[in-house]
Image (cartoon, rainbow, N blue to C red; front, side, top):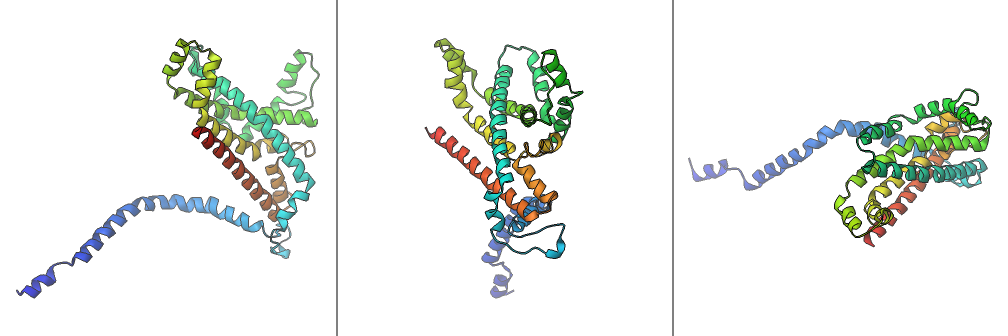
Length: 315
C-alpha cells in the first residue's frame, strides 16, 4: 500500500471535529424533543388563542352576524373604551374590590402566619394549618355557590346568625352595598390561605437566633416584627401583593356565580364586563380590546411592584 493510500484512509481532522460538534448538539437537543409535546399543547391552548384575540381587538367582529365579516378598524375598539360609561363604572368597582380584598386578606394571612409560626398553639398548629388551607383547595365557582347559599336572604346561615344579634335580615343580592360586601367577603375567604402559605414559608426561613438576640437586647415583640420580620419578609410580601392584585383585577368566576354582576351592574368587574361583551353581546373585537387593556394595566402594576422591591432591597 502506498503512502498516498494511507493518507487517504485517515479521516480529515475537520470532519472529525464536525462529528463531535454534531454529537454534542444532538445531546443538547434531546431535552427539547421531550419538551416538544408540551410546547405544542401550550401553543395550541395559550399562544394561538392570545394571538388570535389580539388580532381580533383590531377588528369589528360580531359573532352573531357572520355575514358582515371581520372588517379591520385599527385602534377604534381601544379609542372607544374611555367613553364607555359602563366600563368606567366597572373599573371603579374593580379598583374598590381590589382595595377592599387585597389589604384585608393580607392582614388576615399575616396574622394567621404569625400565629402558626409561634409556639403558642403547641401541637394544635398542624390541625389549624390544615383547617386554614381548606379554602385554597376550592375553585372560585365552588366557593361562589357555597357562599351564595350562606348569604341566602331566607335560608342562609349568615342572616340567621345576624338575627341572633338582633340585626334585621339583609338582602345580600338585591342591595348594592350588601352585594359588594358579600363579594369581598367571599374573595377574602377564598384567597387568604394563599397569603398564609407564602408568608408562613417566609417566616420559617427566618433564623430564630435573630429574634433571640433581639429579645436578649430588650426588644419588644412589636420592635422585632418591625425591625426583623418585615424586612426579611420583603420578597414574600412582594410576591403576595403582586399575585393577589393580579387576581383581584381579573376576578370573574366568583362574580359570575355569586351575583352575576348584579344587582344591575353594581358588582360587574372589568373581566366580567369583557365577558358580557363577548358572550352576551357577541362583540368579540371590543371584548378583546378590553381584555388586552387589562393585561397592560396588570403588567404596569407588576412592573411598579418589582421596581419598588428592587429599590427597597438596594437601600
